[in-house]
Image (cartoon, rainbow, N blue to C red; front, side, top):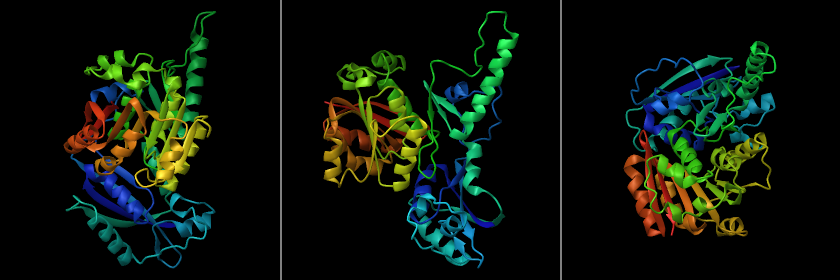
Length: 399
């Protein structure tokens, strides 16, 4: 089998926008390559003795997309023909009656140019193509997604879980054999303070490695901890107003979470693994709903604790009513982009309990003030604006 590879070179800040636009335009998931460096705190959290050599971040990114080459030499960017041959069903082809949209090489290039022209700020991008023989491109990106830790949470892809378990058993057996009589072995990578969250993003966004997701994961832990005010202050934050937070005054097992734009479900699942009682997740993409449900199952979380719904909270009043039928939420997360979050703030504020916490990210630093202002306009008191690289996380409390 052959695949037609399209490599788009653009600014690193355009990674999410280009990936999303290409997906909406009928292309499968992207393999992203950049030289984003590790912060000192990230280096300390890595489970390695010697850090890999890092290239200097030049601000550039390359996004690879693949189209299946049919026997007739036509190109199938959604992989519909491949799915039919392999008996699989990728995210773009959930409808088994869907007909393949095929292109000649020139037509496919023209389609990419049309999509890229619709994405603001991508002027000067590059496009290169080549034929790839028998490459399992759908699995290739997994080589670059490994276990990592954010605070108390260890994010682990399922394909590494068994490998890590085998290595831990080997090291534990070695420790037992070398220990004095009566001593107990300890797994080398075992940390009783870490909570493992297993995430396979599939075709949905949200592995946890992106700065915006890491900001949200950190913020969630600040509010889902035995002593949130203490840990919040320990991070160097001003805790004035923190005592008014409903989440700060309740135990995690009492808390309800709403994750708007749930993607892979990573934020909601992490909250549940940290002890929250219930989570609801919404997304416009059926592939995201499916990925989030599968990830919940990987973490032993049933539908009674994690409710998933497809829909737009700004337009679907019935969906909002359904999600509020029991009671409002203690924490609402929205890791999307500023332009989408802004019109959602009035709705999300109304779904929070008094004293509830709104955690938002996917916000470029220069657009954080837009979200801060929107919060103030809708009865929310901004508490913190944290930054990681070029991204911000705005946290606010409903007054």
